[in-house]
Image (tube, rainbow, N blue to C red; front, side, top):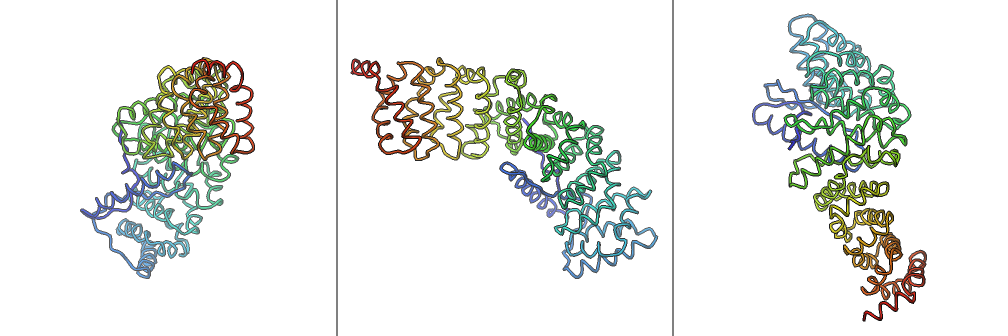
Length: 507
């Protein structure tokens, strides 16, 4: 299967064994950042590792770092062969937050970097963009606006240069995006959306650059006003089709590019009510097909590290896209009915370790069964219902979603109701009706109503299982909607002459 290559986002390097230790810490940090995305949108900064450093970094105190930056700034204004070394030293010194402030306070400091960035010396250009990259990672909010004179050149360089240079430009832009509205508006005006579209189109076979484009775009899409100002521009560009083309992970490079692009698609689908543009690009079919493949891998016990970070945005994309998909087009858009098999596999696999992901899977299953009789039938045909029934005792919202999916099945056909009863749903409902969770009790009443009105055999089976006394107890001890539902079931469907007579004859 695929492996998650997390080494793409790296931090400043060290020497020997410390470099390996730093890489490990960076991987752990990136995993934590991506993990946090499962439950909320997350704007994060990325710092690339300077792999060609061969000297251990010396920790400087604050005053020393500021003095070094000021000294290097003045020396860089002089001509000479030492400029490259001084720029490299400056990029290292700018890792100190206080040194970053000291640098931007120097008059014409940014114009100095822009001069090197636009100069003819390729090595100095690379070191200049490293300096900008360190500044973009600053915790101080006034540093990003100071970098604005350099952003037009960073955008221009996305169309060429080396992979390393392009990555640095992209991650620098991605770090600057969320810092302030001024920076974001300026980048939009400077054409960051078409620049990203051109970059991913020209570099579509360079997965390191594709991943960086995905990161930068995801930073933009998480802006508060993205739905009004950014998403229309993205949807009007070639970006959606390119994002979708990246969703098939590369077995050698890993999952990271697909993860970044999947989160971009998630931000697009959840920020707009009308997803017809994405549906026209085949987004629902693409996401569903990939979930079928991932679900099959998980069912075989293949749970590669990081796989859940791709599964989560794919689930959310499918769930959100379903609401915009016309019912008559659903079978074409979703494609393989084995999507329900995949969702059940994901539900079971992540129930204990990643309950939030299991809940996402149950949510999509609920949405699918609400719209499609064919998918409801598939759950019965593939004998997936008994596994779902066994999950009804679980909490954290999972059992609610599962019961809604079962209700959707029952609502479609009376024949489905009979099959659900034969598969053990009645006895499960007897248990859920005793739960303290009122939403579960009300849902259970609704499902029970659909089952008992489907035919006398189901009603008789419920009575045989002690359903009368259970509903009478609920009627006596409950109030409001629950009591009214219990009364209606008893008086109009379960205490009827035919049901009671049949039950007594069978005693």
